[in-house]
Structures are given as structure tokens and as C-alpha cells.
Image (tube, rainbow, N blue to C red):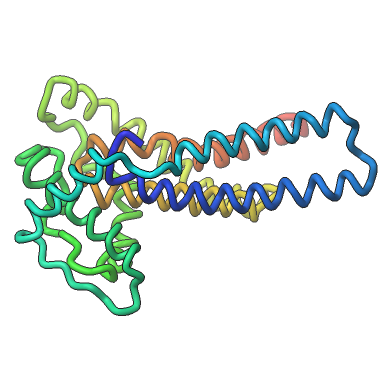
Length: 250
């Protein structure tokens, strides 16, 4: 949320999730009410949770400030000559604008903010139309899930901290790889697969957004933590559950 270019995608996702969650809770509340499974205290607590959710989500979905809008406009003006953007007919105007802003941010990240940084990757790729984002999806997810690959291990970073991190990251990466492979087995064996699938899609979407906007190993590894940890959490919880069953039988 600290990055301006991420606010709008988050808004759309939160809006969708909020509507779906609100409908789900409302239907469940009505069902419990009809079955006389609610007491007055429980009903009050549920309404309190819904009211709290409305306040939080409304604040998140509030319009951008004038300063943010001016900043984005200035950024677009500065880079529009460097990015040859092609509007595609099948893409709605709002979506096209969001994707264009992301392309602008990627260009600025590679050529201004992190220019000549050692951890930059995929420097030749700048999206020029909406379909480029779809075509880059497999590559972007591979980078977000499996990078840094061995060619980046134990090398000197741009800073002292970066060098230390590159000495630690190989061990962390192996843990992530095992977790991602294990997730496939966990997914087919854990209950509530539909809920897990929704979580998977959300995590993959935000991992991809971070990869496409900030193509540097440092930001990618840092900003995928919450999403990658969620996914491999299912994997390792299933692994240890199976291990505990095996130990009981032994």
C-alpha cells in the first residue's frame, strides 16, 4: 500500500472481496437466524464485525488525494515519450489506464529509481499494450515463485547488506521451492479446496504485480514474503500433519 502504483489494483481487489464477503456473511446470518441458532449477543457481535469492515474498507477505497493524482500525471508526462503505448479495443479504458501506469512505473524503476542496480532483471521488457501483461504472466510467476535461481547465489550485492542477504537467500530459496512443490500435494488433500484456490489466485496475482512493477531481486524477495509464506504454510502444515500420523502409526 506504500506504493502509489499498487493502490489502484488493491482497491479493485478489496472492493470485489468486500462485496463477496459481505454477501456471504449476510446469507449466513439469515440462515442462522431462520434456524434460531443466534442469540442476541452473537447477533450483536456479527453486526459489530460488519460495521467495522465497512469503515475499514471505505477508508481504503476512498478517492486518491489531489497530490497523488498530480504526481501520477507528472510521472506519465515525463515518460510517455519513452513508452509507446498501444490501446487495445477489447480492454476497458480504466483497466488500460491502470496497466499503462504499471508500465510507466516499471520504466521509471529500471531507468531512474534503480538505474544500474546489480539486482535488476528482465531490463529489456517494458509492456507496450495490455496483452503484453498476459503474455508475460508465465515468466512473471516463475520469477516471483522461484527466483533467485542458483546463478544469483553467493554473489556480491550492491551493498554490504545485499551481499550478506545473498549468502542467506540460497537456503531460504530451497525452503520455498520445497514448499511450492509440496503445495500441489497439499492442495489435493486438504479440505476446503475452493477457499484455498481463492487464496492461491490472490497470492499469485499480487506476486505478479510486484514482479512486473519492480524487477529487482531485492524488492521481489521482500514483497513476496506475505504471499509466499501463506502458500508454503499450507504445504508445510500438511507435511507435518502427515508426519505426525506416520509417527503415531510407528
